[in-house]
Image (cartoon, rainbow, N blue to C red; front, side, top):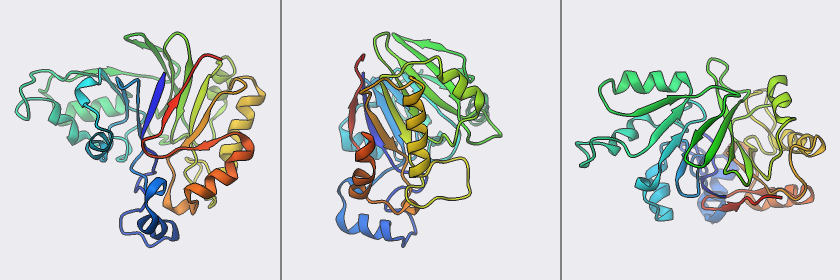
Length: 271
């Protein structure tokens, strides 16, 4: 499988809107991998993960065609992951299509939001629940419970194509026991994991700073869930984390972890 990281920024991106943080100033000046749009990904150019407010700019930058997506899979309803009004552009009168060319997989909260906003629109909505696998084409997707947005069933996603398996874990927090227990029975060929708070730990438990990210990866390796040699890549970086891409590379290299960047393609193979 190939996972294209369309965006690797947190809620307000880098450089952030209305921000004078040191990292935002650095990204404005230097550009490159320090410019991050809101976190999103696409698997094998067909399974879209999250549909945030930067989707159009991301596909224009990567020269992708949204009509290639057979599924849009949502992790949770935060505005940087769900730009609901953008979904309407898949259908008439914005084009000639009477039906969207993709299935939407999302937790009940998101499905209810879409149904309320577009009650008569022919979206194919499939409700997803933590620890309940579902199939789409040749893929098996298993949502697992993230420690994020306790008012809804926020998901991280295990994706398998029958040969290889990886975990897309943005907006995770430190998982609670049911998630750790489930992961104990999983073997991963790759991991994409948030490192939102970077070098600036906060009291908020719904995201990981760099030390917490390292602790999670270490535990996954020690319990055998993350296979030896499996690629590990970070995403969902905040400008408040005060870590440039180069600084993240230096801090993560001793742990065989790569900081992700917008447009990065991660290849996951059976190990």
